[in-house]
Length: 245
Image (cartoon, rainbow, N blue to C red; front, top):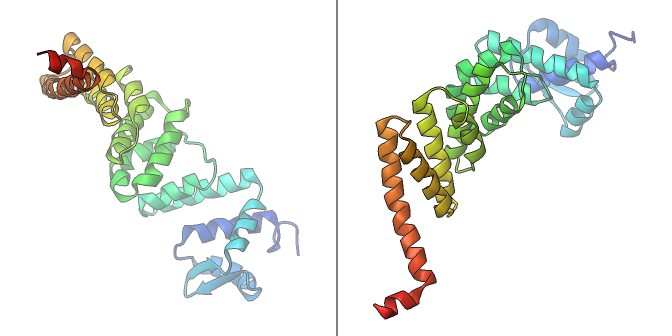
């Protein structure tokens, strides 16, 4: 077999591996190319679809492909799926299959589809949004938008969003977003039972009065709720007060 054209070459292994991860219909030229692998029992071709016969083969082929080539292939397939109007979660699956850098093109695609992704595939969306937030080379406006969605999604999933929401609140110029994010931080602490911290945040927001009125109303309600919790805790810690009254 030739160095670049044989079925055992790194390029072919990478192409086979990435093609299988797409779990999509394959064009006839690709099916013809993969026929020898099917005859060897590496893959199974059913109609115009491709699967590996054994999971261990999938792992070996993937790990045996050079890292740079894997990244290139996963990005290529992500772009093809996106260009063909495929499900956005399949695009994200390709991006997460390796350390595919999120450049301007990919982050703009992500900002366009993030709302849809949070509904269709929330858990992998958290992962790709965490990657975008951690990548300082992401354009600032896109990083802000994606981190806002990350904080919202973490809260919806019952996870701690305090760091992400706090990051947004300290940087955004949008007072409505700032109010939302500060409320989310306070709510996260309240849910964790850290009532004093949540109350301190509410008190600070109500003192500054920077955020729009609807958010101030929410903080007033939160403050009233937290005051009751803190009062009850104080009574539990000092039962002798009730005995003396």
